[in-house]
Each structure stands twice: as C-alpha cells, then as structure tokens.
Image 1 (cartoon, each protein chain N blue to C red):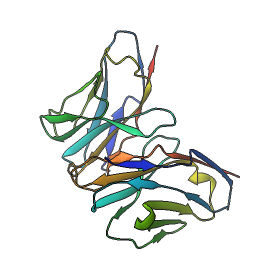
Image 2 (cartoon, chains in turn brown, purple; image 1 turned 90 degrees about the horizontal axis):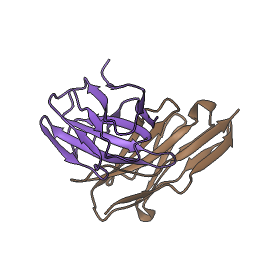
Image 3 (cartoon, rainbow over the protein chains, first blue to last red; image 1 turned 45 degrees about the horizontal axis):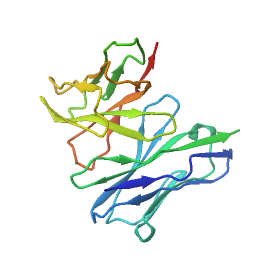
Length: 113
Length: 114
C-alpha cells in the first residue's frame, strides 16, 4: 500500500516570506514517482514537478524549489519570497509502477499582502 | 490549444435524479480519469479508462457509472444511488495508465443537491 501525508492542512504567510510545504510518503516499491500539483481557486490542478526515485537532486525553478530525501521519505516544496498569486491548495502525489496515483490531502496556502 | 474541457461548471441534482458530467480531451491521450474532491480532502479516484470501450473502478465507484465510446470523451453519470454526491469532480487524462507521466486536469464540475 502507498500513502502520502501532508501534515500541514493550512499555512498562512505574509507576502515575501519563504514557506515550505511538507510531504512524506510511504511505499515499499523501489521505483516510484513523486509529483506536486497546484490547485488555484479556479479549481483545475496544475502540474508543477515530477521526480523519480532514482534522482535525489534538488531542483529549483524560479522561486520554487524541491528537496527530495529518500532517507526520510520526504519531498518538500519551498516557495521563496511568496506572492499573493501563490495562494492555492498544493497537493503532493505518489505513483509506483503498475499502481495508481495517490494524492495527499493537500495544504491550503494563503499569502497575505 | 490542447486540453481538457469539463462541463457544466456547476450542476444541481434533485433527489432521485441521475446527472451526467461531461469530459472531453484533445490531447490524444489514451488514459482518462474521474476524481472526486471533498472539502479539505485529497482527490479520490472514481473510475479510470485505459482505452476506448474499457474502464475500471477506482476507490469509490459505488453510485457512479462511466462510458468510453470515443477516445476523446469520458462522461461520468452520478446516479441516484450515490447518496452524498455533493462534491467537486475533476476529470484528468494522461498518455497511458501507469505511465508515470503527469496527469492533465480539467477545470472541474461542482455538483450540489437541490
């Protein structure tokens, strides 16, 4: 069985603060893929990043960065210098070979001006 | 532009009524999915389809039905057997099932009970 836990249900920050969204996963498979999606108020899920289990390199894309640590089964997402437009629900998800995508319960991020 | 179109955006159901949610994609994807999202919860899989004329139950299929007569279309019917249908419904597609490729999502349909 596989599971994704996003312990932070809601986070509220002031604009320009850095914020980290935590994601912890469970799987017995050695090959798996991790995803982050953003769900703005409009409702659609927007794909942000995919990482496979063999690639532990951290990734940076503009103000977004991801820290993948297999030793702690975590795939955390950091937004640097947050902006109001970053306000959304963020989902972490896990897919293993031959199994379906499993989502965490999401973290509601609110960035206040 | 390629993408997924869901309609309607808002839908109201009367007691004992079946309603159908539309999902169309022009991404030439083989796999399509229906998810249900309740407030404060993640997405739960209702049904998915790997190919035309084939579909499988997800984790919460009871009270729902689907069809896949065309590659582009994967409509979801919420039947009267679904006693708690109020939720946000999202349709998604990917190149194939279990491809480990990102799924592409529509804008969703919000279903409420009258």
